[in-house]
Image 1 (cartoon, rainbow, N blue to C red):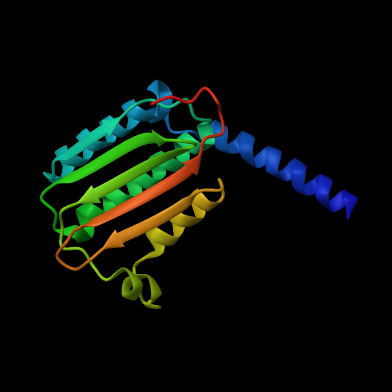
Image 2 (cartoon, rainbow, N blue to C red; image 1 turned 120 degrees about the vertical axis):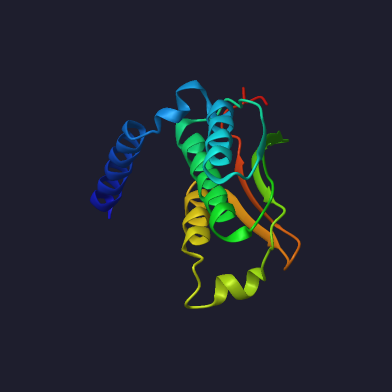
Length: 164
């Protein structure tokens, strides 16, 4: 058992180093700047305006990557499925957590039905949820038909010096 634990710990360390080496170049100027560039790129490609409100909390790289990937996945869903005319991305520190919210004014959907259906194209939601849960966070999806969608990822702050 001790050998298995040591091997697992070594593997986790190796995986974290690999992830660090694969970090998106978008994050070179911080998560807030990366989200603003993502919104600008999305608006240019899709014609859907994306309003980004984001500070630059002092987060570990793995958390920045996870939140950027969630934003990318959520905005991809907006472009492909929402039929939205506007989207909003908000990143803020709330107490001992950092929250990323991606909201659109699109057609919305029945969350329970979409996520539960075996033929559901909700792989993206599952991938986002797994990514956030690996960091002890939560992902929620709120939507109603004809009322838009909000995807919220929350992670615990792991650095005491974090700021918005």
